[in-house]
Image 1 (tube, one colour):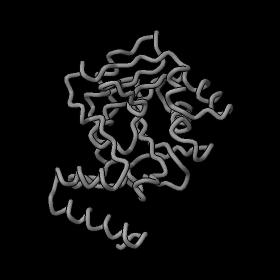
Image 2 (tube, one colour):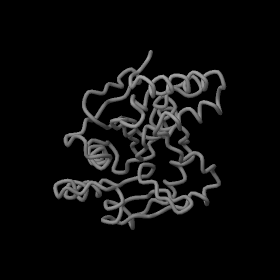
Image 3 (cartoon, helix red, strand yellow):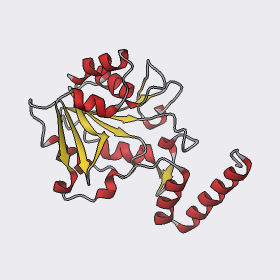
Image 4 (cartoon, helix red, strand yellow):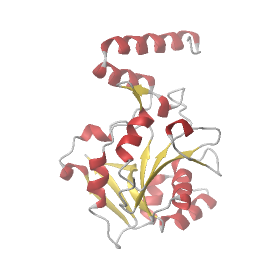
Length: 216
């Protein structure tokens, strides 16, 4: 049942080139990254996925919104999300951020006003454009930038009225903003959760380094 926050939620998936496999389907604590995110994002009015064509997450009960402009990065995912979302505000979350919690959405939502169009976290000087809330008014700006061949997220944030929300004020753990890009980073978080599983991940990665292919 929808809580009617007036906020849709989208999980952005990419090509996962550095990881070598779909990061949304990586497992952590007996759950895939995407299933963990769906759990936390369920407080929003709807949850869907946006990304490259050819992906299917219907097994998680999620509709897939495909990129029209392939291979230009998350700005296209945000454009498509704002185009297809039911709500005027969309919480955007990268699929490789398995520690995102619903409290982060609620905290950001507390800053929503008509004065800004984007609300993104800033932590220890680093901006997190793929963990934030975007208003539908960002849509035409993103479209213009893509048409001009400008794909950098920081340029998009500079082009719209952006509120940078300091994460330190939330009282939440900074680790919640962590994203997992490489097999080494994945191995580290698996070590934290399960030593036996960690050994399997490390052994698999070593095998890939030696042969250049997936050994399983």
